[in-house]
Image 1: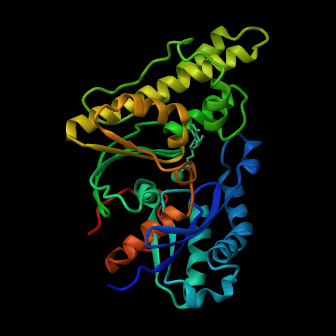
Image 2: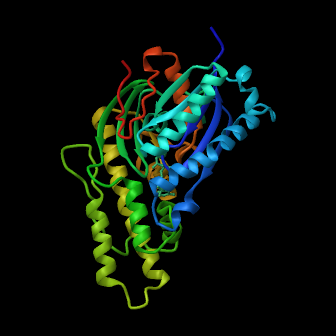
Image 3: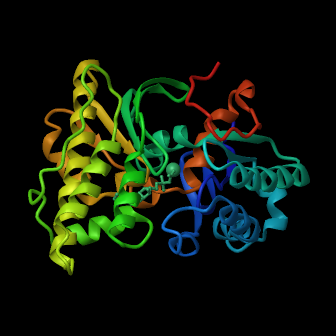
Length: 343
Ligand code: KG4
Ligand code: ZN
């Protein structure tokens, strides 16, 4: 059997510029340069600013990833050290994706390496393997909850997926970001809401648990509106920390309950014995704690926080799996790229 290729992954789909080197499911280096400070002034990602920041940072992030993986050896020595280059080809912001693709293509051409485009959501769904390289994981039900997506995927094996449900409106992370903006908490909203909610009462406000019957889809826009109306109708003249922390704790509890209930009922329906979480929202402490408490006989696995939020190790890993299948080496970027089984 030939040794596993050493793959450099590049991730630029949203507001993290990331590069990582992975070999056979082992992370040799992982560098993430977050643009959160840049976008926080606007309480959300500004696509044009994101593309520009990726352009400014991507070369040095790649340089740091290569140096980190190979004991300080520079990117210019990549030719003899890397076996392939992978990049995120979608879904994501078009201009941001293009920057990652061009950087990956230039390196691959210069070093004579194979190039592979990766689906960002597929990479989130497979990231758990980097945390548990020795475990037999497939099949499992994956809940990918991020800033742009809330998807339930049945993962039979790498490249064999069934999309069970997705959000019909706002993604889970997006509502965290919008509620944070409403409450004037810093961007990104997920960690801010979680932090503020720690001192709040999760039962203070009975926000709705939006469960769409008869399907595995999610809908969070009604919950977002309920928070908006609550703030409009109940904010004291001088809204204190208690008011904000109670809303954060109660809103977070509603999102957490909704994600858990839908996912566990899909797991029961499918007879799934294992649920894997991924995406930035999977970093939420309350979600992790309550999922484990509610799961019963279903095993629930979370990647470490660094593999939940956007990173390039998951891109390199998914790329190394796709490399084995030449037909899957598609390079065209697609901002709305769906998760599909490989041909
Ligand atoms: O996967 P990710 O890093 O980027 C996308 O692919 O979108 O997810 C980012 C999202 C943001 O909406 C952010 O607010 C949310 O994940 N997030 C969290 C937490 N950390 C990040 N949401 C809830 N609780 C957290 N601790
Ligand atoms: Zn993501």
